[in-house]
Structures are given as structure tokens and as C-alpha cells.
Length: 108
Image 1 (cartoon, rainbow, N blue to C red):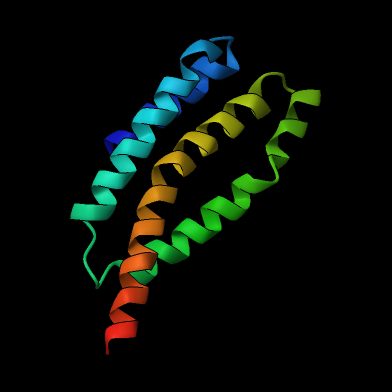
Image 2 (image 1 turned 60 degrees about the vertical axis):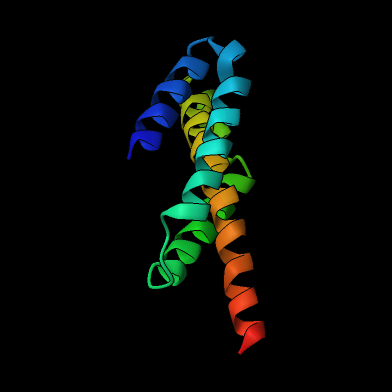
């Protein structure tokens, strides 16, 4: 759950002008996602994790929350940055887990 706290803090920083560190935060989130994808996810957790990852990545893909900035600046930017950071963590783990699942299906 540490990644969620990092994602929220980085999202808040991005929303209030601290965009300089976003690249580094995204890189750290991707590395953590790779580590989690390689080590921490069991076969039992695969389907729920992949389902949640799909929902998160689809929700983040359109950047629909940026419209909120029209009425409550910078709330939309903050929400979008938080989702982007969480997606940076989840995407590599989901890719690795999906490849493992495909490999296991292919070998049976």
C-alpha cells in the first residue's frame, strides 16, 4: 500500500505545481510494479488483480477528470495525476501477470 501513498502525494504535488518530479515518481512506480509483478502476486490473485488493473487503466485512459479543473482548479489535475501514478505501478505488474497466465495456459 506504500505505492498508493506515494501516488497520492505525487498527485497532490503535481496539482499544486510540482510537476518536475513526476517523471522520477513514475519511474519508481514502474520499477515497483515490475518487482511486485515478478514476486508478490500468486496465481490465486491473478484474475482479481487483472480485472482491477483493466478497470483502473480504462478509467485513466481518457483523462476525464481534467474537466473538473473548469470548476475546481486544480482538483481534476490532482485526480488525474494520482490515477496516472497508480497506473504506472499497476500496468507493469499486470503485463507480467498476464504473460505468466498466457504461458501457463499455453503449456497445459
